Length: 323
Image (cartoon, rainbow, N blue to C red):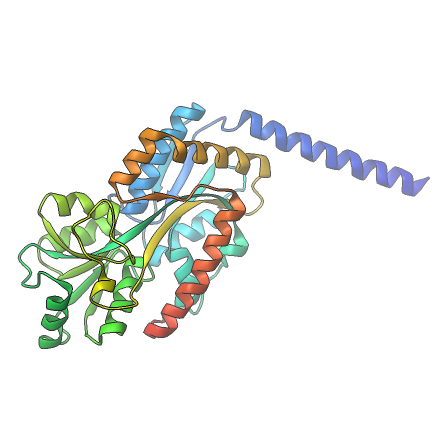
């Protein structure tokens, strides 16, 4: 009899938990949702979060508020998200640094793939190798020649240590044998300001945050980092054209703290996939050079795991390590 009662109580507890989860999803969100972006405003992570936040706000009737938490090579915002309550009211903008940092940093107080849960992918975008308008090199070969004639005098900006922007530059250095001084910023916004002013010489930025400056003539795009040209910049060659085998790209998505109710994750996933299928949204993302990566939470985590493995090889190849 005691065993029967125990089983019955366990079944009731499970039913209550399942019912609570479904109710949470039906009423979610009942208040504003914080979307942590681990970089300063004006970078690609910030731009994408604001575009998607507007969509989610309109669809759910509750504000999705972007909370910029830059610093620590992406790790400050990441750790804040991991330590947030798993109730669906804190979401995180996943970016390549979350895959890169797993091997780049020797001591991290968290394991992203273990401590966070996937919601959905957003987009994949090329990076673009760009220089100030007055910089003497107009092509990738000219840039390589200039850097070799001026060893150590070329400053390579990035949106932070461990970002795809940083590692794209490190991969370029390793594959060409040139020397460049890395100058990390707390996001693409301040890096772009310094690049336009000529205080730094090159940036391998995510295309969405730079495309306006390129089309406006403030910056010169030397090449995109994907194997194929970007439809958003059809006249710009690839780095691979001059440095065979070179390839890099950036990807973005949403995650939540471990333990967030599955029904809430599925609701967010449905809304994001609906956004990525919307013609107006697709056109907006295409203007920024973004290619939607819709799918299930599992699809997004499979991508994240593959990118973690890929960038670990690049980190090892480049010899980049941060304590």
